[in-house]
Amino acid sequence: MDINESIFDYQGVPVKTFSFGKGKPLIILHGWGASSEIMKPLSSSLRLKRTFHLIDFPGFGHSPPPPVAWNVDDYADMIQAYIEQLERPVDVLAHSFGGRVTLKLCARDASTALVDKVLITGGAGMKPRRPPKYYLRKYTAKALKFPFTLLPEGLSERGLKWLRGTKVWKMLGSSDYKTLDGVMREVFVKTVSEYLEPTLPHIAQEVLLLWGKNDDATPVYQAKRMEKGIKNAGLAVIDGAGHYAFLDRAHQFKIITETFFKS
Image (cartoon, rainbow, N blue to C red; front, top):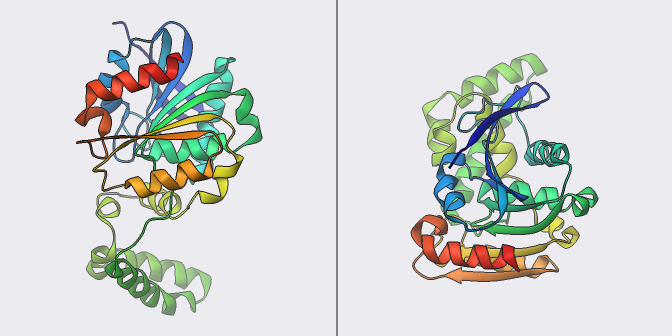
């Protein structure tokens, strides 16, 4: 299999892409903390007459971080620009964070001419049910930040920067946040704190939600919320699979994916 590696220059950010095959484009988007590498076994196994496009989001894989902290819309803008330069409609297969970006993209009026069918697996973007300790951390963090917000702007920024470097602040962060540095920490905060329930009624595409029954990162109740909110969505749940259903039950996932995109 010959894989074409290229750089998509988006507003000065060199976005690494991989493509192979022939036919209608199928955009494949990875999750947070991963890269297109994790999606290659699935894409190479699919028996579909497609040109597969695997993209490393800025800040992941072989794509450098954006120059400033992007939000979900910024990532959706980049994917939209990539699709537009292909000059033909595409289908999308997205995992986790890639699903979050896809929801935002497909809620736009312009997406109806750009995107046909969508498969989301373990998609992020729904407001989770939080345990009490989450709210304890959240309000402790707010209490720690409050005194610095009363200072003049320059002092406030320096004080908050100092606070974020303390052991106490780092203990309050999520495991994902703790592994990040620089601008990607701010990207994480911006993206993970935006819940996309209001976008769901605006999505017109046919959407298959393909979930692992044991997904504990984006549990099935979140998939059911997506299914209820998107007018043309269906949900399929795979037993014995978790957040990475396409790895846990690779053959079953492959068969369902092929059936969906061939129909």
